[in-house]
Structures are given as structure tokens and as C-alpha cells.
Image (cartoon, rainbow, N blue to C red; front, side, top):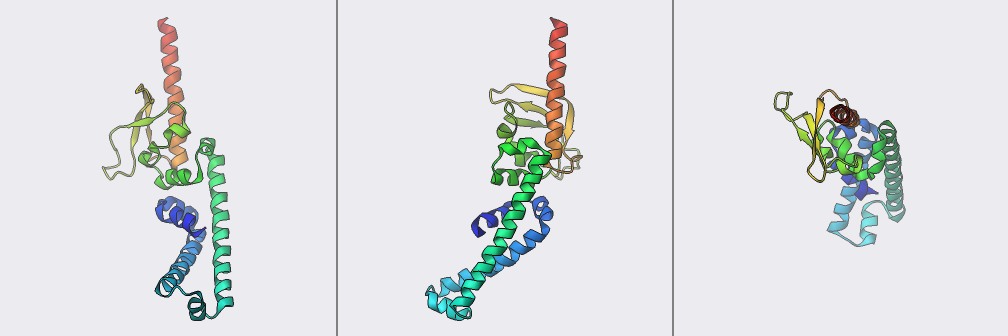
Amino acid sequence: RWVHLEGVFHSSGTDVQLSLALEYQRFEAVDAEYLALTRRAARDPRLLELAAEGGGATALRDQLDRMRSQLGRVQAALASFLETQREAFPRFYFLPDDDLLEVLGGGRLPAAAQRHLRSLFGGIAAVGIGDDESGGDGSSAQIISVSSVEGEQLQLLAAVDTAEASSAHGWLSQLDGGVREALSGGLRAAIAAA
């Protein structure tokens, strides 16, 4: 559990850490305790010495049980958080937990979701980014087009401004609507031309 959660909390962005603030603090406490224990074991790998240094075998077992219990609570809260995100944006059901955390951790940055677009949207392989209107700090982007795997490009009728969205699923929902509008407009134009 520690290995999985360590990757989640230390590689995810601050949006995920803020959403799970209590669990993040709980994980950080267990993380520090676990790393101290592994350092002690690295210095002297004999179990009896490790147990004696920590107050005996029973104390060591209790410490490990307590850490496992705390990590279980963190993992349950994380699963609940991810389920809430999937309910808010059902396309997230197509992503495994680690990939979803990567997208959520990127927040309003389309680059964080770029490699997962094929899983989220069947026909979209990449998004075209326009000029950054946020002052060049890279904290947001204007999505102006989408591309398929075959290289076909669809210009959106209105750019999706990721700075206006409060979360990843916010701008992804706007992107979904923008693609629908662009396809609908193209279809109307084709029917009118026929």
C-alpha cells in the first residue's frame, strides 16, 4: 500500500493533494514513520535488532499494523475521491486510477491529459493549443482544435479556455461540448451545400 500511495501523493499535483488534505497529512505521517523504519532496517537488517531498537517484537508488530491501518484509510478515501470525480465526468471511467490521478493532478493543464485523450474521447488523439492568454506563465491554455490519430483536424468554433475551468473535468466537459458544436456546424454546412 505504501508503494502505491507514495507514487500517488508524490507525483500528483497540488489539486489532488488539496482535495485530500487530511489523507495527505495522514500519508505524510506514515511515510515519515515507514522511511525511518526502513532506514533502521538498512543499517542493521537483523529482525531481532530491529525489534529490540523499536521496543520489542510486539511493539514493532503494533507499529506495522497501525501503519497498515492508516494506509488503508488513506486508500479508501482516495477511492472515494476518484469515484466522485468519475461521477462528475463519466468519461473518467475509461481511465485506470493512476492515469486519472495524473489528469486530475494536472488540473487546468491540457498537457497532463494529452496522452490520455484517446481513452477519454474515442476520436481525439491530440488537442491544438493556441496562444496562452494568461500572461505566459503556462498555467492555462486555449484549446483551438482537436486532431484524430489519422491526422484529421477539427477547428473548434470557440476556443476552450482552461483558465476559466475550476478543474480538469471542467475544461474536458467544455472540450466535449466544443467538439459537438464544431461537428454539428460542419454537418449543417455540408447539408446546406448539398
